[in-house]
Amino acid sequence: MKQTITTLAFLLLAPFAGLNAAEQSQPNIVFIYADDWGWSDLSCHGHPWLKTPNLDRLASEGVDFQQFNVLNPVCSPSRTAVMTGHYPARYCIHQHFAAPAQNHARNMPDWLDPQAPTLPRFLQQAGYRTAHFGKWHLTNRDTHGAPNPEAYGYDQYAVFNGGAELPSADLHATAANTVAFIKANKDKPFFINVWLHESHTPHVPTPASMEKWKHLDAQKQVYAAVITDGDNDVGTILDALLAAGVADNTIVMFASDNGPESTTAKAGPLKRDADANITGYDTFYSIGSTGGLRGRKRSLFEGGVRVPFIVRWPGHIPAGTKNNTTVFTAVDLLPTLCAAAGVKVPDDYHGDGENLLDAFQGKAITRARPIFWEWLGNKTEPDWWPRLAVREGDWKLAMTADGQRVELHRLTEDRAEKTDVAQDHPEIVARLTKLALAWKATLPERPNPACLTKAPVTDKNNPPTKPAKRVTPEVRAKAFASWDTNQDDILTFDEYNAGLKGQENLAARFQNFDKNGDGRLTREEFINPAGNAAGGK
Image (cartoon, rainbow, N blue to C red; front, side, top):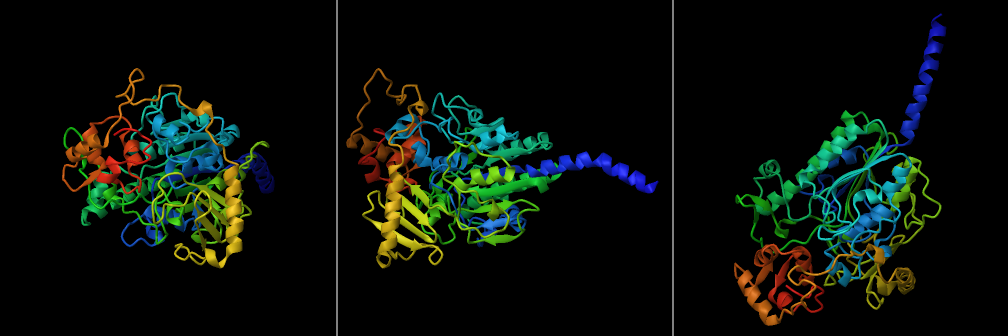
């Protein structure tokens, strides 16, 4: 009789066991993408005073990929690569999305093509619930007519830096929105992009995190507080997965969109609201660390494109491991995550990445394809001059657009790219130069016209009925003298912003003058902006 009851119980429970196995075959996916978070801005990467206990916890429960690269050293193109599995240059997305006038001057579209293949759409079509919370920046807040996130495959979203018609979400609501989505969708497979603001400027640390680090000097205090806020969000999300009972069936990934921002020599005026409360800190407080890698944000050297990448997938990934051999890139995420979810990509999808699922499962993988980068922004010395780069195996070549200037580094022996060995290996230089130029030749010359705004592209101070005013060097000199409030012969963004009293698109216009990307304008940069695409103050 006992055996009969046992057999009956097994037969009754068997269908539920089958459903559980089916659910486990489709893991949930949470991708936490930080902003300007340097490779060494984690305590588990050896930072001497920053503390990231939640990221350390994630690393101790998963794998820390130490050779992960994004495919552009600034945000919008880096994020395009994640979304599409394609090099962003295939969509003429070379720099961050600014207001339309600046995009068009850069030969860029005004938004990512909604017809492009995307990871969330592939997962959505396979039955996943999809969401995007936090930063968007696949268009610009000054752009009218841009598609909303649902056009790219998202069921739910709350974002900032979306299009002009899209309400902006609170920077500090990203984790809370993610937690709510997890609770509501815990009984079905879900995919969530969690794109944090930290550690991008303006820094907006919470009072609690500022209090925690009050023993540090002001510069370190602000940056440590910002990192703590981002790390706390990671912890909140990990706890929510555990509370929902889905932590064991969820792939959690953390990465950054590019290397750390450059630090200015002096602090500008603090941003304050009408009640004199501090609302933001400038790039003087951007003291993120590359961990000895060369270059920073906007550079094709490793400090600009090698970023943290930590993955946890209980029961699949060996816990607490470091992978310093697998060369993983942002375009590999789409095919790898689709494979993990058991989702077949369409037959007509031809991505630039590789399915590296075996690396997720602890195996040593050697990628078959080379990696390519293009950069058309800041080109100053010593680390921002390369326009193209290619990596094949252990070798990485950085070069000008015509290949006349090159540097060759063997990254397994020269992680910091200190020693140029181009003269010792002319055959490798020749091969990689040929590869890079051949890849460059496959890229489109102009963006898709369907991805350009139909609204008039003008400055609000120069409407279409009036010709744009020419701003002379004499006018610029007077403005510089007036706005340089501390008379140090340097314009910070805050001084520039105060001088123009909140006009449109000031951040992008400031960056047009700021050719070396150091977050401040010398008198010469401002008065004689050679090649300035903005055409005005």
